[in-house]
Amino acid sequence: MVAVVVLLAVASLLLVGCGDASIQGIEMDGSLGLPDADPVATLDLGATAEQGASVDHGAGMDAGPPDLGGPTDLGPTLPAPPAWYQPGPLIETSADELETWRYLPIDGMRCANGTDSGVFVNVTDASDDLVVFLMGGGICYDDISCNLPPHRDAILNAMGSDPLAWWNGNGERHTGIFDRDAADNPLRDASYVVLPHCTLDFHLADKLSTYAGFAPLEQVGYRNVQHAISAVAPTFEHAGRVVIAGFSAGGVGTLGNYHQIAQVFESFGQPSPYLINDGGPVQARPYYSVASHDAVRRGWALENTIDAWCTGCAEFGNHETWRSIHALHPGVRSAMVCAYGDQVVMGLYSLFDALGNPPHFTSELIPFFPFVRISMRAGLIDLNAFVQGVPTTGAHRSFYYVGARHGALTVAPFSATPGLAAFLSAQLNDDPRWSSVTP
Image (cartoon, rainbow, N blue to C red; front, side):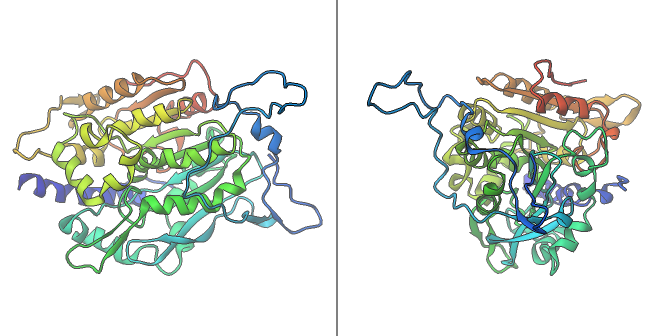
């Protein structure tokens, strides 16, 4: 019973922490190949099929010089895309639409309340890089959490009648990695594809949910990702760097969806995308309550989604997604970004277990903030050691910082998190000196 009561508090925190950053008191303020004579052109990121096929993932074997009269060496065999991938038409972008936000409705994408969904795109010709970003905002996994007023309102209202106005009213759209005018933003020249989180399932579920007080809810965040990638990936088939990033609930969503997104881009001959999880740590036991882990797994029926590829999640915890990601995509360079005293994440990981025992945390005082205690530092350090210890030909590093702010990539300028821009630049430029920051 204690766990249920505390879950209520966490559910309330999640909407506040994962939504508009202004609620948190944070002040926020490749060529496209567009012919001169054609005001509207199909997006072409400038690479050729030959360039895309030249990337070697080790999937095929070099047969050596061809025998006379025998088959020629066609290069490495590319992995097949997942069965759900149904490529849609290329996204058309006119010259006056460059570097502006647009909403693209996508067939099959749905919000929890049954309304249609889609993605927000901001295309540039400054580079051929691509960021696929998963939004945060709210949580709903049982009768109680879904009926808390903030979450109930988010479910019923979704993105409203004008999704673009909803997105334009969100402070994230022009801050951090989305600020093209910030010289220290390592992703300022990328094209952006943003997936809303209107299913309140952390982009992890694929089920029709029945909760008290609601008509059946379409918690299909996992399937929404499939529809979104089918619609946008063909346009970016020859993208340079592909980055899969997310904030809060979307940060957790990057772990649950990296595999299925990466499969598509790797089938184009591209290397494994980069991964950045901002403010969505999934810690190992005992730092993450078993009761909370089990409740979320039941509510979202994760056996039908991530368990298909995460071999250890059901038994050991969802932090095992990191291990499976690096096993299935060994070239990935992944990063975890989080504050030691993140106010929202602390609420999640301070849950009591089913027996009413307190969590096994160490508690430290934050320097210069004697009245603020952090209770998850040990868990974050443990998580970094765990992921850096999994076998991989890629790499994993963490950027931790002192403070209580929830999120860093999109809720504040890079200057508010000293060192983060340099950390991400080292990750994205494959710098061998890239290292964890764990003060």
